[in-house]
Image 1 (cartoon, rainbow, N blue to C red):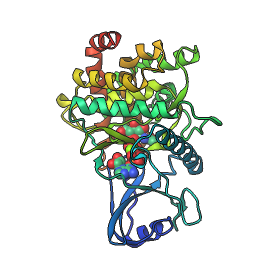
Image 2: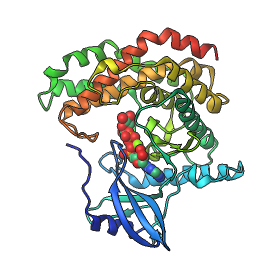
Image 3: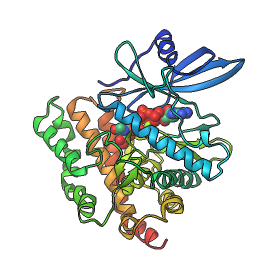
Image 4: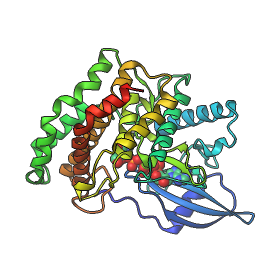
Length: 372
Ligand code: ADP
Ligand code: GN1
Ligand code: MG
């Protein structure tokens, strides 16, 4: 089971000591609710001022080429920083992540067990949310993700590395699930017949965006690919989305994958692992707020086919993540961090409930987008 790494204070101090941070380490604690990396907040005294940093162990079971991940992140954050300076933004270091180098000038360091770590300044006066609070927040978050896509759109140089190949390839996600159903390595299939049936009925959906891309109707762009609500920092004072974080999957992708994941994570009032499925629903006011926010920053570069599939993308990404949670459940919880044996199944069920909720409102969603 993937439960994340346990680190002693001394082990964290050893890792943190490799970065170009001066002062004295005061404390450290595990931080955040991400499913992939091991994240710690560390506090230093720097000449009497408390300063925090984020230290993160990259999950190298998932990101097989961490150097490529860091190369992408350096390129994207440099580009973002440059563009923000050009635009005269007041405090760019709160609006884009800064990679803090090691004492040797490298973007990451290796611990005694071979774990790969990186370090960012802690963005203060802001936080992430696991559940959306109100429509205004939805607009702000969508605007921030759209702005992120806009900032990196014109980046020069070679194509970014694909840090996880076929990450959003919904056909291969479906085929992996089918293979896991056939192998049933943990004997869990009997308990998921209803979920597997729901997904099988919707198999045709997984090819829709891939086909449009193959026909050239939807272009490849530089996208974030993990635009969960809790991957954007929201300013405590202004409630604006100030900084997009979790940049491991920034790579070539479809803008619709990003919008779809916003719908998946920012329209329902329920947690991703809620077990009372009657609480899971796609709330139309949140969807409308997301569309407004996203179009305000990304509307200028999206084409008609992309705009026409905004509501579909929410359904597809909820389906895709449902497929991934179910696959991981059948495989024995090897990918996402889990806290108990049915955690991935609970998460799968909320995703499928969300798909059903979107299906019941799809016409209305489409009409709203068309009217923009
Ligand atoms: P994961 O891939 O595991 O989701 P993230 O990079 O999203 O890892 O980090 C996990 C959580 O840590 C985020 O949701 C956020 O709350 C917090 N976090 C990450 N980077 C920063 C930062 N630079 N400043 C403040 N909080 C951060
Ligand atoms: C993971 O890292 P985190 O928690 O932001 C996952 C996403 C899933 C999401 C489901 C690299 O995101 O793809 O959509 O969990 N990230 C990776 O909550 O697989
Ligand atoms: Mg995250």
